[in-house]
Image (cartoon, rainbow, N blue to C red; front, side):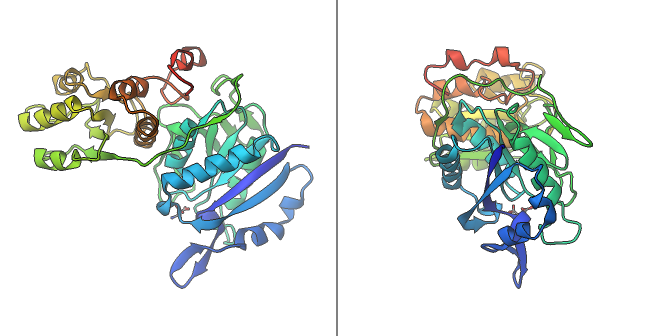
Length: 350
Ligand code: ASP
């Protein structure tokens, strides 16, 4: 019989109504699960629920929590067929993306899920999300970090939360769903990563000294300058369309160039949810390429932030970080098939 390790980190799925609004309460989710008849169903994999001692609203998540989740998976890796991480929806796309980079050579499914309405409430989406995630985690065909929500399995480092109230809360704009769950569970094997041969290796996430800056008409070079003060090591620049900025704002361009020259890694990430940065398309974008800004291509904002943070927390050399940002390390860049994964050419394990 397959067995699945379920880590409950907090989030709406196990929350209870309190005087201050919904909040996670220890033991509440476990008790709610015990009284649901479907969880006694013999066709479900065996479930081991582990509730974290500090249950959080995911708005409070930090890289230190990601390290705890990664270690928890690593400590239980041999004993279970797959892992479900119950997590709040607000930052689930960040956490799934971060863990995808931190867990190198993952050969078992790690599925993040949560819900928009707590388990205990009428019309909750928790039950379906939970059962679907557990069934997918029991499948040996998905050796990667995923996010499962509203009948759809997404690659964990390709998602954004795009709806704060609807049940279909996530999208993976630049990579198709890995599986859909209807009458049947259909896993698209052609889209999932291949199983690695080497053993699991955990990379810790260090402190994250990066910033993000959204371009908008009238954006001030002084604001950018403040963003780029020490100890910032990286910046995700959220640009227009195919990766463009107001290039006639010479002071702005000069500040970006100066930062690149000082070794700050600046990544060009489009404000558009779907599509890719193409820094050769317009003069307003090619200027960034010429001054040393990295192409964020079709990565989501959550992916750019977590990948940059992770690379900067394990590497000091900005040139190496720039190069790795452009390489497909965990299937985060669209259209990069397994055969074009460049992990074998990296200077150390990634
Ligand atoms: N604020 C909650 C959280 O992210 C929202 C949710 O779980 O849906 O933990």
